[in-house]
Amino acid sequence: MSSPSLQFHQSGVSSSLPNPRRVRARLRRRPAGDQSGGTVWLFDLDNTLHDASHAIFPAINRLMTAYVARVLGCDEATASRVRVDYWQRYGATLLGMIRHHGVDPADFLRAAHEFPELADMVRVRPGLAAHLRRLPGRKILVTNAPQDYARAVLDIAGIGHCFERVVAIEQMWVHGHLRPKPDRRMLRRLLAQAGIAPHCAVLVEDTLSHLKRYAGMGIRTAWVTGYLRTIAPSRPHAAPARETAGNRRDAAVRSTLEAEDRQHASHAAQEHSVTLVAAESQVPPAAGGTALAPQSQPDHVPRMRARVPNRPAFVDIKVQSMHQLQRRLRRTGS
Image (tube, rainbow, N blue to C red; front, side, top):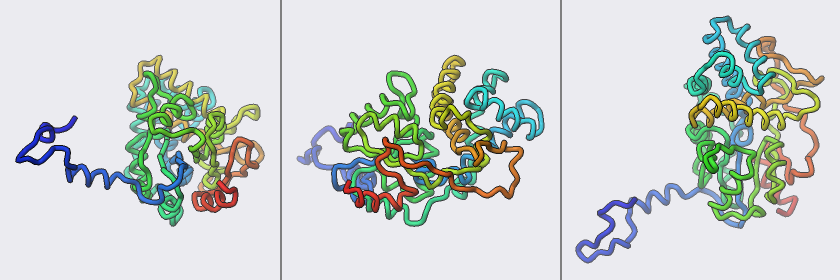
């Protein structure tokens, strides 16, 4: 609502003249870089613009294990086994803690996102901001992560000024229900609100199930593979062969939110739960179809890039990082 002081004429000066403070605010919000052309880039955050598998997702899992140990009054090795068991049975540790121990979801989620050293955990490739600025078109961040976390990561990475808008999990409510990616209703509403035709949008993601879901809406898709891991603490077990990692994640998100609805969990708890599910299911299993549980992983296990399959038909562009995106676009004539 505008201030009353802006709604009348004083000394013959019209209130329609631009307010200098508002002009400066608009200039500060204007994203940097090339905004030309009709393309609108919808960027994911974790493992797309920065390497979340490097430190952040493993940290979430360590914090969850410590929380389980406190609740159960056990050592961390036992807590880790319980955490893996709950993930295998319910798709998310949070579900098991709610169902079997009556924990407060909001308290659990706060404990799992305590990152006093976030600046040391965010890892981006040099020149990321310059590549984003050179990429022609509007740029919007669309992430299932919480708003404060997303903005903090953008600021640390030095790329917050490249985006005209940040759409975090808090903005993904549709008709009273939380609809995170890959829900089509949420994205349809976002495109409509921003005046974006689906054929003008390009979703840039690391998660294949999200790309597949949204490709059916007519938007273009770019798959970023460079931050996927083969072995990391954020993958406690291998998914069954008949299920894909994307299917498990989508099912885990739905199951988590349904369980929290039954427990009358707050909106804040629902918002953060999606990040936890992502952290627990981010990394593909190791070679041979198995993965090491967190308590059994030696410290010297190297972090390895995932063995990424060929580009699926629903993916228009496959790149390892943002650095390759513009070059690949020129090659394909997009």
